[in-house]
Image (spheres, one colour):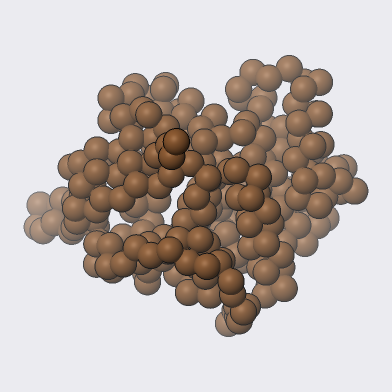
Length: 239
């Protein structure tokens, strides 16, 4: 049976000031099923960041309903939302958000500490996920002793540490070189092949091509939603 993990039902987000209102999202609806790898793509100002904040339970829509893994987000208390952000959503950010003078092992253990997991189990799980992302030999390196691509791998291991319902990746290759970006995207594919649901926000068409489905946004609306083979010739470049 196909299980929807994300249901976005007529989501709108309007920012209001005294002078005027800005419509950031306009009546957006889609469903993402368990195990999908979806890219949400669009230029700056297309509404994808607003949508990411709603999907990450960091913001509420002005109108519409968001259901994550069977839970209607707007009915939850602040504590329940914080718990969902910690346990149900694994965040991967463009800026990595690692603690700089802390070992990769401790960085990955951090969300598990907040979740009250005993130390022995935290060490075992953090080691397992760091090995999974190819950093088994870097457990005691601090994050400022490893490359950008390796830092992003640590961030991915941390995102996986509580076995969340979804991995939400915001411009995950934005701060790393082309060769490393390719490695990160192939790592996401491996993680997706293991059954993890991945939703990736990007403005780069070649990065979006790695996903199995691409939702394209413009002016706060979805202009296309299509399946994708996920086969890509890599042309990622940075200024």
